[in-house]
Image (cartoon, rainbow, N blue to C red; front, top):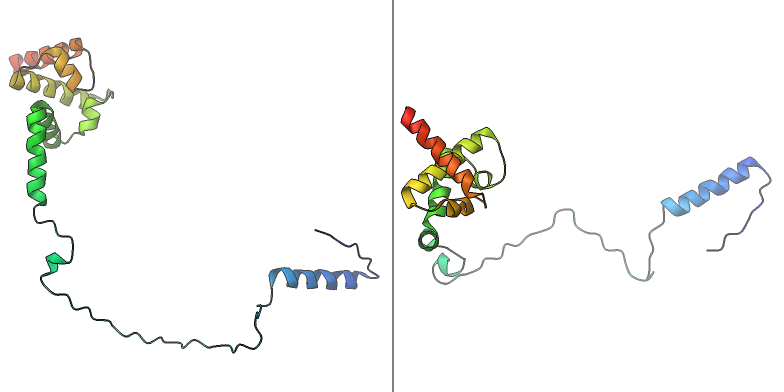
Length: 161
């Protein structure tokens, strides 16, 4: 960009030049590319003509409708139960107890999560007869001694009650 130096004779002349530059930069005039074209005014309220589509047949043929969503969900649950019934039991019990499945299998050490985790370890051991290492893997890769401690703790509490 080439900038030419200008000399001013007075402060008023300098201010007038600055105002002109400011107006040129911040208030540009709209460009008319072709002077011969007329300016068309847009009406204030556009008229809208509704287009009515005529659809042949029932609406479910034209829109994605999932009639069998509950059946698909049930089938996927059956597949999950067949693959790992202990994990499905664990998720269901977490929902019933109001605990997050991720918090139970995660590494957190909050007391409320630990109590639920120990109870669920005992339930899985009693119901499915899994080994301690298998229960540890089900609960996020924990050591088998952690499972052994949890199960003994719950059994001691049940014996006292």
